[in-house]
Image (cartoon, rainbow, N blue to C red; front, side):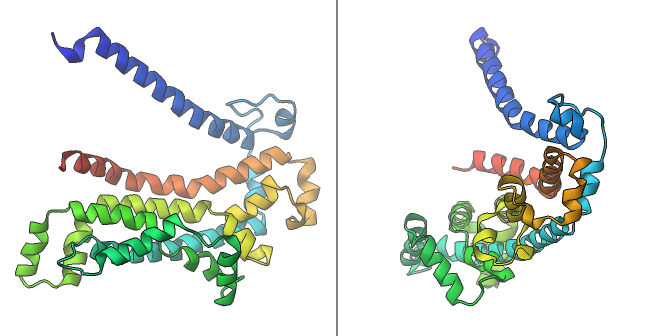
Length: 294
């Protein structure tokens, strides 16, 4: 009997598809509702007519949001944060993970440094020492306060370390025998072979920087220096109207509070949605590579 075509196998596959479809719907339906709200009229939203499809389609909420200088400024801060923070994260991650992937014969102090970084994942000094350390370094209320405290994502180091260890030693040994140094072995052999892992970790860093809001609220003393998510947390979640101009308040008669918030959420999602398709092929390649390694 063919196991793949048995009734039990078919029922199991059908249940798996149904479960995955339910999970996908639970993730996508709220986004569809927010998208529909952003394109609907304030009257339709206020009366509860909008579900998954816009009612009274219009672009007034997006015109209002994109015309706000506060939103544009916060959006620019987040873009700059991603542009500066992600390369720094990946550079330090690669430089730390590569030597830690070697055995003790090649790197004597490997165990000490490995536990040094792992300890930072297990123990934390707390919020107040973290804040005081940043303040004493003199970067409080500056752009670098959003970048330098999280410059070394230790979890990413652990993931890339294990990926480097899974690479065949013979490839690097062949390069070293041909005259390549350690730097050349890293950048011309290890890094290209680890493209799927590096692409995945790059996306993790992009999402982390883009979605982070807590650091902006704690470390920035002036609202004009907030990144986008900190701005949205203040205006949408806490609904602090002090960050809005008098012109914004006057426009609430034409634009609903809910439609404006929905439009801001959708605009904030766009950059990550644009980046993901370019890295998706590396996720598939990484899954295939991981499935054939012993």
